[in-house]
Every structure is written in C-alpha cells, then in structure tokens.
Image (cartoon, rainbow, N blue to C red):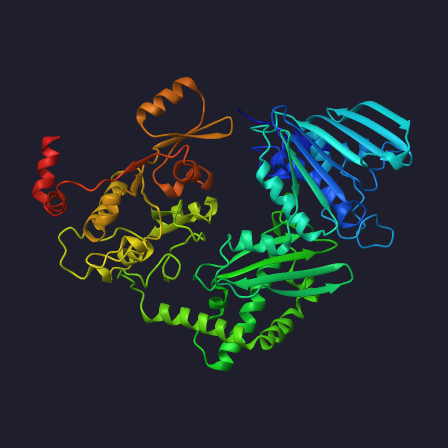
Length: 606
C-alpha cells in the first residue's frame, strides 16, 4: 500500500456483536473448542442455584452433532418485552446491581452482561425454552436474530424445567466444534462441592452421570492425588461479612517435600491465580515466620509452604478479573482485607489448639531448611534417597505426582526454554530443569566434576546417585528427555549430556529411558495450527502445498512460544524423540570426545 490516507473515513465503528465476532478470543479466551460457550450458560444456571432458586441443573452434550443443552429449574429467564433478544444480542443482564436491595442476585459469577451474547454471536443457532408465569415460551435465534417465537399457556406446576438453552457453535469461530468434556465435568464438580442442595446431571453422547462430590473427597483426590498416608488433618479458616466470604481449607503432605499445590474458586468459578491465592499464602508465611523467630528456628518464610495443599473459596459481590475469561483475580488486596484481616489470628489459635501438630510442622520445616543448607550435593544413591523424600536445591521445577509411572524429566538448554515449558506443562507429570551454559566434558576428566553446579543438579534431579553408589530403585522419573537447540551448539550440549549419562549413570542408558528430542528448524501456521518443519525437505514441501504462508526460522528453543514447545516436546502424539541406547564401545566414545586428532579424522573422512 502506498500513500495511505488517514482521515475521518478511516475510522470504523463496530457494534458489540461485530466486535465480539471479530475479536472472539478476547471474550471467550481459547477458541480451540467451544467450551467457553457451555461455561457461560452453565454459570447462569449455577447463579440461580447459588441464590437458592434452583436445585437441579442438567448439561447434555452431543459431540456427534456438536450440540449442547443446559437446563435448570430456577426462576425461569424473563421473556416479556423482547428480553430474550436483549439477553442474546446486547451486553445486558440482571447482575449489574449485585448486593443492592433491588438486585435479582446476591453473589453471582456474571459481571459484564456479555456471556449469553457471546453464545448467540458465536453459534449457528440458539434455541431457548422457558416455563414461567404459567406460560411456555420458545425462541429460535439465527445470526442473533429471533426467527421463531411461540408463547403458549402452560400449567407451570407440571413444568419439566424452568430454562433450557440449546446451541450449536459456529465453525467460523472455533478450530474444532468438539466439546472437551473433562473441564466441563470439573466445573460441575466444583459447583457440587460448594452448593449442598444442588443436583447435577451430565450426559455425554448418551452416557449419563450424576455429579456429586464433597469438599473432603475433592481435596483428597485432587490436591493429594489419592495419597493420604501421611497427611496432617485438613483444617479450615473462614471469614464472612454479610454474603461475602473467604473459606480456606488446607493441610500438609508430610510424606514428601514438594512445591505447594492449590486450587481456587471465586463465585463458583475455577480461578487458581490472583489476589486471593497470594493473600492465602501470605497468611501462612506471616504466622510461621513469627513462630520461627520466637522459637529461634532457622527456616525461611517460604519453607512453611513445602508440601502445602489448599483450596481457597471466595464469594464477592463485585470481583475483578484480568480479562473477560476470568482466569485470574485482580481485585486489589485492600478490597479483600476486610475478609482476610482476621485469618492470621484464626490460624494462630488453631495451631495453639493442636500443639502436637504445630511441633510436627515446625520440625518438618526446620528439617527441610537444614537439609538444604547442609549440602547441595545429593549424589549418593541408596534407600535413604527416594522419589518422595529427596530435597533438591536447584532450578528444577519438579512434578507433583507421587507415582514415577508416566513422570518425565526435561533437561533443557537455557532458562527461556525451561520457562516456556513450565507454562505449558502438566505439573503432575512434567518436571523441567533448565541448564545454564554448557556442562564440562567429563569424558576424560579426573577432576572433581561434582563441584560443577549444573552437573550436580542433573544428578540430584535423577535421584539415583552415581556409580559406584548408583541405585535404579531411587530413580525419580520414568523417562529422561534432553531438549537442545537444533544447531551445532545444541548438538554439542546434547553430546556432553550423553557423556555425563554414560560415565556417571550408565544404568539409565541400559534401562533405555533416556531420549533426545528432535527439534524443528522451521515452523508454519496453517489454519491457526502450528506445524513443525524438521528438515529443509519438510520446509520445501510445506511451501509448495501452502504458498504465501508465513514461515519462521528457529535459532533456538527460546524463540518458540509455550504452545509450540508443547507440540514439539510434551504432546506424545506430535513430538519426535530419539532413544539413546548404551553403546557397545563406550571407551571408544570417551576417546573420541577427548581426542582432537580423532575428531579431525572424522571430519576429513566426511
């Protein structure tokens, strides 16, 4: 374009519907599937249940026809005076006055009046059935316009439900129309925990399931992953002012020394990040720091969060989020102080009520810190070091699973790649260790290579110790994967790691659990999907099949975003791994790594 003109004609005005469709990701987050449309409908039904107007909610998903139906037995959606059209085509709703005397709702998840408008805008069609005021009302909307409306008399004492919304998402706005049913079930499970009187029915492709879960069951299954052999009692802290409330349920897993794990809920929405979680952690840091100072113990404030497990449930009239998708709570600390101020006193009183547990926790935290301070080198194998009690003071971002099966350790070149992997990993099974620079070549070394921090961190992470104290019984992962750049420097780092494994832990190579990841040289985007291109041949073929498609050349893992790293490293269906086997001639390999003459010979032969 040459000499573009910028004047009043350049200014475009979009209607709310046009803006929503043009920027759908801004309103519904991930557009990989239409799950968010289900959440918007379900949350309205949950708000009815939370206000004690509904006791039954049903969600029916047909993934063959790509249709979802949500119904509840609440008050019924108002339909007079074109209300249905307003609800599904404008930013409107009945929750803007929450907490006021004339509000239809108290605590509710709805905020901006956008949810059902998004459902209408991003669906091929929507059908609404309402039973209310001794009427049965039916509406069908296509392209956000009501094309059919029927209102008839009906004896509402015999109504099957109050409101039912059925929709089919529009393929123009989603990569796939298949609903991901697991997070939908998780959302319903969370609701069943916090609304005692609510019955929840989920039907997926004709298979019916009643969702019924208590907070204790949820806490043990999700936060302790079924392992409750050596946990403290599960305690509660609670503060309530009128309808607004914070409730923290917590315990420690004394069988391991793992990072803290938490879940969060705000007005029945799963919100695991933000102010409410940070303030919860600060309560425990403050209380245990004061106790440590009084008792002259050496552990640090963050040590009290070792193996900490908690669920924080928050109910607010007007929570604030970082986006419309409500993934992270941004309500300021000062706006939550009125609920949190009393919780430190509650925690102190609780610990005084259970002095034996208090002493056990203080010993646990102090022992953790002493082990870290005493030695950063855990290089001996043996039964005293295991997957569940080994303490590692390093850059390792460990996984939380108590099972070695399916757990994977990724040893990455550089902190940027490690950081990207941490963002997209499944923290239950993926452990990430980022290395700084190149490790020494230990092929012929007679030096104390265990003084090298990077080597020590690799060995500590494995948990097996090194020969002659190597023990496969204390291995902490079922698969070890190296991830280095797809260039000569990356290949050199990979070779140095393989020499480390061959010299210090050859038993792992013999077991066949060490792999080298194959990383792409290029990447293309096709219909919003990342396509890794591993060779020049792959690149040329892709260019021929997809002309004018943008191609990116990768100089290193740090240039790849988390979603791309997930495709290339974490997804078992799409990643490429090369198994590294124990060689028949290890001494020849050591000689090759230390002999410049042998290396020159190989180069000359090529």
